[in-house]
Image (cartoon, rainbow, N blue to C red):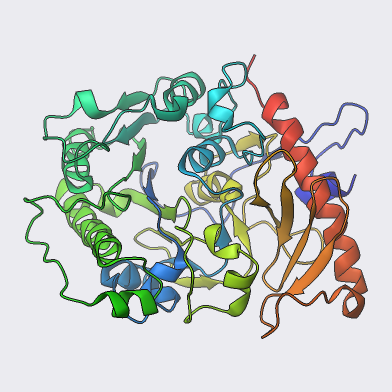
Length: 421
């Protein structure tokens, strides 16, 4: 009942465990003469600690920083579980991948999931990845869940491979643009672009439109949270390519009628992040805390302070695009008011047979064992975030204890209940 109330379920049924709710076309939809395109761009291994707009002192991301000032900029955005395949899963299904055996994509019995991407009726759907989509069996989720999707992967591109992850991100953007710019103006599309360059071995392609490697020392980049100079330059390259993507979209003629969603899939766990609040390092939140920007011409810039989770992306973008939908998964349109208190994002802080789970808000983290035992409450702005402050905030502790365990167990159920028949 607590989770049903929190999610705003239309007709809660404790016997059927029904979490279905409906959202119609909203008055805050973005205006346009024709349906808006949607472009998801997953930013490989990019956490908030690596982005200038979130405080990185080395200015590695000028393009994302500029976009942040022109977009909806989410200061407290989290993926529920770290790992690329788990982020692909939750971004498509709206269900956190809380499976305790590798990834949900590897379970052939549940890869045909309901997705709100299918609510975008009349849209041409694309999924584009520079490498092999058979990795972690994500191609099964993509092909079986997204109606009539066109999946483009390594073997479909003309550009040369640069490393084990396939073609470069810039070549992915350029060849993807050749597909998108040929679409009839009255044919909307939903495109999911999965980047890979910001990942070991951090390859810098020889031909990358003039990108220059920065001459910095290991001590400089480590002081700003990077493990190596190569990793720092890979972040710079990813940002450079995002800048090129926006130029390409404008030249391709679809920028003015599109919603762009940029989000990290997970952070690369690092040893020190002096420019971030102590809680993110000491409580292990840095792996889940990633950037999110939603950008569209005509969308007034806004800073979102409340905690938002990956499962909220599709409902929120559908609301912006004026697309009605029925949702039985976890996410909510963030423009819909929360029924009570702060928004809560369910997390898995440590994976395994006996995981440690969490519920994070803008101000607090509740963490506990997977069975609900040993709950502790932590103040995210405290200089001593490991201190348990449950006694000082009894109502917050009570609410978050119930929602943290409830949302985790509900996600475990939804992995199987969200399956399309």
